[in-house]
Image 1 (cartoon, rainbow, N blue to C red):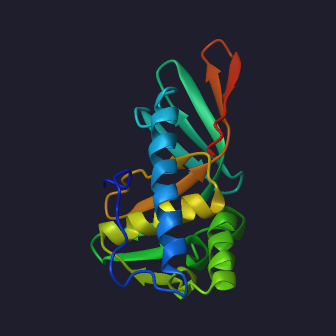
Image 2 (spheres, rainbow, N blue to C red; image 1 turned 120 degrees about the vertical axis):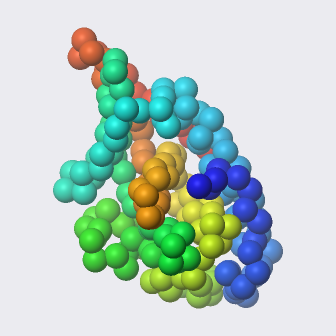
Length: 180
């Protein structure tokens, strides 16, 4: 799935009182995703042998041959190409409530700004529409990390904070990024 590509504003997906505001946020979100992707590749994002997300602790972990990387994480939602739908994390019963704070923040922002499509639990969405929703959510929440692993039938969209890198010898370092 090419969620790092510029999506454009799909017709009918997001409508509200201020299309200009959404268009600006969308462009900013797409730029943030591009910057985050490039920055996090420097420690290996996208090349791990395996990864896991523990909802109880709220930590995502990537495992490499010579290190592990871990970070506090949130789930924005899931995109299912087969059903052409996007389900916000706050509406997904399999996601613990504490893992959907950022998704709820998007909903709250949308309610306050009159953007109803961002408040619906499930949205009809092709890949382009899902990418639009993700870019808007990344911008609204000011996420500092973004991960969209291929889950087979669906994609779980995960945001994350500062990354702790732990080398084989136990030494640690932190990778943190700030996007303006």
